[in-house]
Length: 57
Image (cartoon, rainbow, N blue to C red; front, side, top):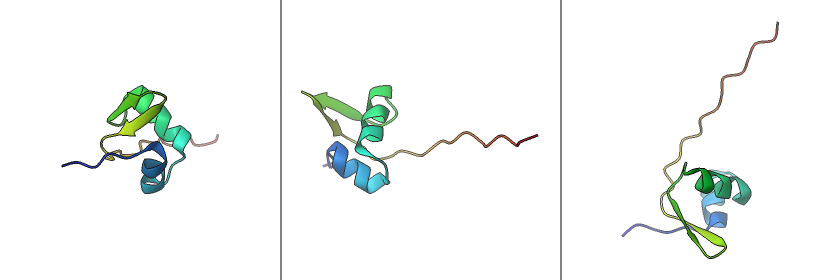
């Protein structure tokens, strides 16, 4: 059985803010389901994808 996390729990596990977790859920970047006003995070498999830094000229 898979564990379900609150946005706060997921944020602590991933080292992100709860607001950022909600953003990822809304964008479909993490598996989550909206329950009322809150999100249930179904899977913590998330890899940060950062844009490469541009070199200054």
